[in-house]
Length: 239
Image (cartoon, rainbow, N blue to C red; front, top):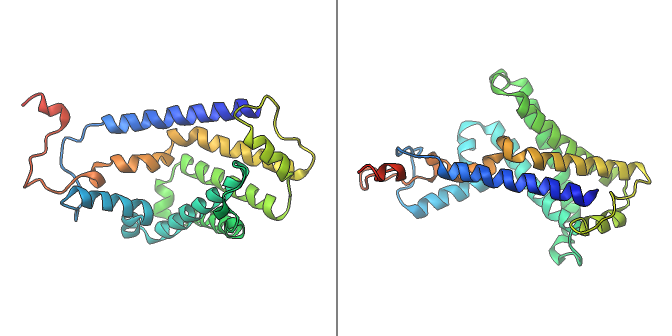
């Protein structure tokens, strides 16, 4: 059962993600539309994209509250994901060991950041007006993942040994889901199903900004219209 779920989720995620990237890459960009001030060299564009990914520069300029919540969420999510490496590799990488306490703290901060982002959508009328059901759905899904993980850390302890054994063999095992002998094990199954649901909807939601950012012409174009004529690939055949 776990193997079937793993392949089902991975297949939908990979096919969906790659198909969306293919659509982004094939979308025409007939005009020079970089958001100014923009870099005038390709190296500058690469640096701009790096800072967008790491520091969310554009979001900082437009919405300080969303920037603070978003940066806190993404930074702590990275730490939490690295900490989860202990469930999938054996022996555990040396650098993962010292991250256990930091990872738990990061999980608390991540849940708080998600709650803050949800509260922001509910409190501010301007943000509430442009929020869709999908926006709330993704936030509640992420909150469910975060809180179920924290419950396992602080309240309901699952059988970690059995879970790691199952996760490390989930791509080839013919056994079922991890044994359910306690409330912690039930919480783990809920946590696992929520993560699977998130990965399934990922390619079909706004979460695809993770890949779409790199194909945005307002971010990936060099600001050199006076030095070099911009011709879209499809227009070259008409010249």
